[in-house]
Length: 426
Ligand SMILES: Cc1cc2nc3c(=O)[nH]c(=O)nc-3n(C[C@H](O)[C@H](O)[C@H](O)COP(=O)(O)OP(=O)(O)OC[C@H]3O[C@@H](n4cnc5c(N)ncnc54)[C@H](O)[C@@H]3O)c2cc1C
Image (cartoon, rainbow, N blue to C red):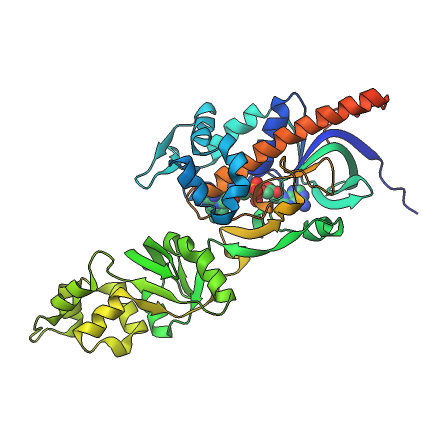
């Protein structure tokens, strides 16, 4: 029979090297510990770098109250973490790393470099006291030991404290595959099922419409789902719709679809009232075609006109029904796009199973942070800021717990595990 590998003692383990894990490592390091960060992928922070491809929206420059409100019901849970690390602190943190940032017209904050790699490089320099082990895939526990799959076979690690920062369940190819869910559930930790957040939706377009308009942006329109309204830009895709405007209403639409009562209404002319449209469309059109009349009287042309014809072909008779359709066009949404394509996920470790330091109540000494916790937020810098905020918070609490439990051990005359400096051969 094969001998089980020996158990390696580690003072502080962080599992997952996304923004939450790196923030936890920074907090542990600042507290004088030398954390070991275990990462399944060959390199760290892949999703963070992917976020950098669209400019890396770090945070939103707005009041603490407005920022918290974006998290809906989860805001109250995140309040202590975002009080310590909110939009101001996120901007200071980036500047402190030597990163120049700017605030766009919508309040979104980006690095001037509009990518994540320079910031990550500087952050990793600051974390030079941290030991990183990549290609170490955590696989749950064996007794009290953390079990990892590595290129050199299975390894077991016993950590005085561990911060789990394994991410949510979107874009699994970047590492966050939620494989950890059954391991935590087996230890009695509640995990709310993951659902897509900030995602597109399928719409049953006709083949003709999809062929003509897939890829077309529809600028300055408004969407409404129940009481949730947003204005901005969406993109028509072959399967349906996506883009920042769709993401802004995606949670409400997902939940409405779940209850079987989704109604998505598109306003193609949010700057013009219905009455004004009726007045303009009522002017005699003479010999002009309907397409020309719509363009001249209501500014409806191109993909907007395509949407009107596709979704309300029967309303194109009289000015009143045309204006009604322009202002309130029902979009027949079929379903949300899958988790693997979503920007983020809703669901995760239940708040009731965490203490105020983000320690798992059933697993003393094990903390959790980032998107693996049960919160969701729209795009706009909220996701990264909350991942960082919970990472710093869990890291600080883990350091405190470690110091206090070391004190207890010392008082009881029990030997302490030492930080390790050994690096696995590649
Ligand atoms: C395309 C895209 C663009 C985005 N743009 C933005 C943006 O501009 N602004 C914004 O605020 N947010 C953005 N986000 C969301 C943001 O990137 C995430 O919310 C954030 O990365 C979550 O951080 P995290 O540390 O919790 O998880 P992750 O970043 O997912 O990190 C988790 C880490 O854990 C590792 N891991 C998982 N399982 C294991 C295991 N078993 N063993 C060891 N390691 C493991 C993973 O490999 C990964 O490195 C974007 C997301 C995507 C997909």
